[in-house]
Each structure stands twice: as C-alpha cells, then as structure tokens.
Image 1 (cartoon, rainbow, N blue to C red):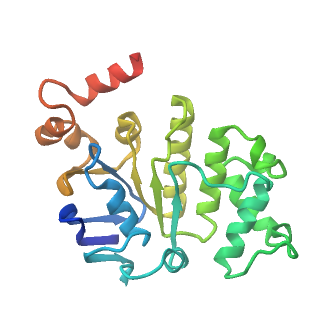
Image 2 (cartoon, rainbow, N blue to C red; image 1 turned 90 degrees about the vertical axis):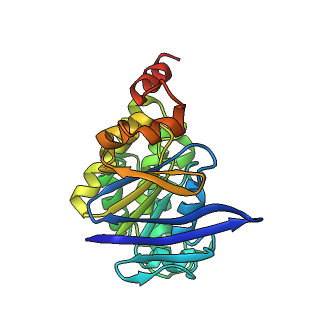
Length: 259
C-alpha cells in the first residue's frame, strides 16, 4: 500500500501542459526515482508534490492527507522532508546549529539573534548527525566542509521533522562518483531503518539504476513507463525518448564515465 498517492496531477503554463494527468504511488521503505529528458515535467511534478507550485488539478495524498492547497511549511509539518539540487545550509553556523535550526522549525519555534539555535535540542541534533556520519564535525562551521559533507548535513536537516516522505531533488548533483554512491548508500540505509518513502529526481543514470527500487519516466508531461530498474533499462519507449534508436543506458553510462 502506498504512503504517497499522486493521482491525475496536472499543470498548464500558457496553454502548454507541463504535467498531464500523472499518477503514481510511493510505498514506505521504497526509493522511487522520477526521471525523464529535459522538459519532461519532472521539476514541475516535484514542486507540486511539495506545495511550492500550485496544481491545476489532481490529488496528492500523504497517508490519506490531501497536500494540494497546502503551503510548504504545512506539508513539512505533516512529515515531508526535502533536499535540494544545490545544498541549502547556513554557512556561518556550525554543523550542529544548522540541524538545531531545523528542529526549531519542526517544533514551531522561532529563531532569533537573541535566542541562539545552540540552546535547542543539541542532543537530538547530534543524534541526527550521527546517523549521517557527521557527528565528529558537529562544531565546525558549514563553510569549512567539503561539498559531499554539506550534502550529508542537508540530509540530517531534512530528517529533523521525522519525515514519512523524503523528497530529494538531484541529490548527487555536483558530486564525484564516490561521493554520489556514498550519499545514496546512506539514503538507502536510512530508508530501511526508518521505513521512509523517498521520491527523487536524478540525471545520473548510474545512481538511478543502482539505488532505485522502482523508476517512473516522464516525457512531455506524461508518464510513459514505470517499473523496476531492469524493466526500465530495457523499455523500448524509454530508450527512444532518451537516446533515439541504437543506444542503451549501458552505452550511455560507459560514454559518460569515459568522458
């Protein structure tokens, strides 16, 4: 049974259907990859699920709660975490203070210069950092971290509200191959341990096929395929949409690695 249920989701811009009747579900403990060529409607779909963009029609339900019409903050408090293509942290704050800021938000508290984040639930913040392998760097400023470590901190921040669903927008963008694999292996581990559902977009096909439990494919705003990695890898329509004819995902990955 799906934790997240998206049904007949639609969005039109200037007469163009960016998303046209898209439906899918994500189960607890599942990593679902949302892929497609440029202009397929991935980002639009993603932003409607998260409430950053208003849908023209359809339904998005999390554990039976309708998300359409709710603001991102309301959706966050219902148990939806999110990471972004470009990691969003406060560079001037320490690693642990960044997580404490997220805990303040999850608790409905307001941060101010007169009440530092460092006074709020430090032990809980450290526990979250331990889960992503960043506890030893808790008191370092985020500005001093390598980019791969910043992405780990962002993951801890996204989990501050104890999410049922985690949305990850291009989680491995800008990362080296080892960093990509380390981050997604960590995400997979957390999904199993916490029973979260994860919906992620990704351009790196090696990441998608290595870590996704299922994959859905959009093209021109419509869902054209869904299935496990093996089924999608061999899907004729997906191959055509991505590469035309004569290429496979394996060949594309080989060319990318050799570039």
